Image: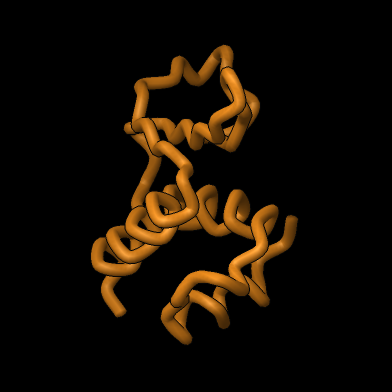
Length: 88
């Protein structure tokens, strides 16, 4: 599966879980990582550096999804396999 298509499926999955995703320009001198998930006013927010590569955006999103119970949502088999391989 092409990376852009995979990222689109991951964005749909995060949306189903109620996770808002924002792509923001992060100044590298200040950044430890290219993004991550946090909780703001009780809602989950995934912030990803807009300048990150597509592969990096995928890695960040997969890492964030590992924190959630995905048993109640439909997940593509390719995404399930990637989640199994992704480290927390």
